[in-house]
Image 1 (cartoon, rainbow, N blue to C red):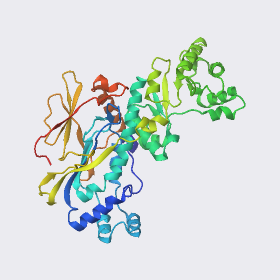
Image 2: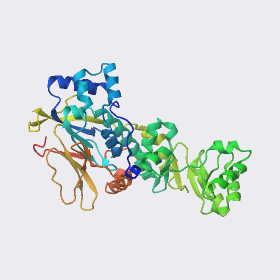
Image 3: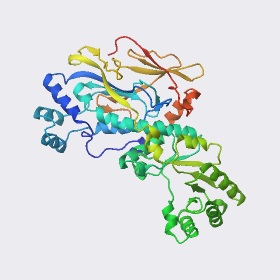
Image 4: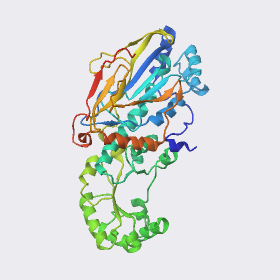
Length: 447
């Protein structure tokens, strides 16, 4: 089976060192104190959304499941930890047998979230669960940030196709993850071939200005591209003078020319001029693609322009001003002693500005009679959904076995459905409060 069709791929090597040293020093101290085997519950949530944002998007779940499976301390990893005196010998021996054997539940990839939504719940011994903190947060904070920005851009595009093309503006591996997250949130294609190979994201791309400048004339460059890629290709028309380039493009390709791309200048004005010129030359079916430092606001400003598609780079891969989702991984319950029967108790931080709520939580999305979401309900008891409520957490890992893998297309479809049930205000780009209030319900002892 092609793993790419499931939005995942086997990780080569271990992910165990994608962590912070204090995870291992806490483990060492807990093993010495006898508390390492106490059961514990950790939750991932955002205390708030980026300023002015109305919803967030869950992304990276498939990548996270791969990382949990590959979280193993092999001989080379243990040798490094011993050489650096990061762990003592008893801890190294414990790590040599490490396997996460607990449970992970979470919001399904592509769904939306709000402040204090329990996006992920990790349950196991303290020793097992604490080690996953950094890798969980590094994946989810990045991918949720990119997917949230991508969703806003896709909404602004109003159904017009979008290509993700930000690889050269970020770390090479972040580029692959960003392409995946953007696809979840509605982007059509990516320029990143590794994202295509690894995750099955559709890829696209034609030529840059360098190709035109290589040739003795623009005409020669266009001819070479058309001979290679066919009349349906996209020709870049702003290397020199746009009007002349469009005329040359149609002369060479005829009305079958697939598209032209504009990468600079006043994109709205240029698109109108080019559309009129194309129509006048009989190329009424030739599409207009625009690129060049676009974000959701720039895309929205082009809504009335004759633009058929967008390419977005820098703004997308940097989260359009919010490069992290500001998610945290906090312990919310722990057992009084070792063993499966030890009673659990809620625990919470009281730090100024960084409080947490104790107790293992569940969540549901409350819908009104029209099927529109009206609240995010978070409860410490067993959820009691009404007839129109939707439970939000699903099993991802059960007793150490991954059970939550799915095709990337399922996450993409889920995001479309999740957006459709949000109130109309959620889709506004203007700054505002979260589209749904988060309501806390004390449902009794569910620790």
